[in-house]
Image (cartoon, rainbow, N blue to C red):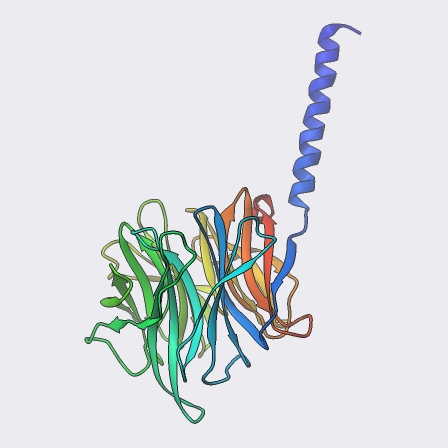
Length: 337
């Protein structure tokens, strides 16, 4: 056989191998592992990387809504397989809920939580609660209450998650039927920026930014048609556009793979409760859905991209007890036509 024929045959073989490997990657199933189940109820997660390690946060309590006694647990892992507890944050006679993680401009981990006071079974106060790590990420400060701008403060103020952009942290503060964009430079004082005038009792929201500084907000709604909404705004983030999704959301997280691809981790309600990852266009219309092993009481993911995989923390009770899981999803699985 001539040399040119041999080279041609080798090229064909390499191409076939490449196509086969690509096909295998695209068809690979997510890898999911349970990482924690020590409390009666383990739920409401978040996930970041800091100084070469994963950090996963979640609430430990007696149940989904159980009154005083909820605590925030922080785990750390170098490899995503073996996890150790580095913090358990609590406030006496209070319920600490939904710990969310971010990295401040000072290169510290900020844990943003909700702290609730009760009269009997009735919630009488909701306030932001903050803990900040040391430089190594191994020690966390005693939780302290944050302050909401008096112009919008109420008895029920929940800043659900912070995202930092150019030295400023942005979050959505939600009350009983209203949501506001707030900003902070220190993680302790939350200044009113604008109101998002949206019906349907909007509440849990996650903010992300594209490469041009445009803000995207994924919003859960609890009334009306209950469909999720994608809100967008350019700086100074006071004029909003809204796109209604074709799915209901629960505990949503959001990543922007690019300006055309939104990745939304959320609870799926129908045909039954489950944890899913939606891949959507910039208008929020879902193009692809990736289910994860889950069921019953579940959702509230944290997501990040590392080593060409989407890593997602979440909780689920499909194995009989509300527990914490980590999923690894190859990025090619998120592609859609």
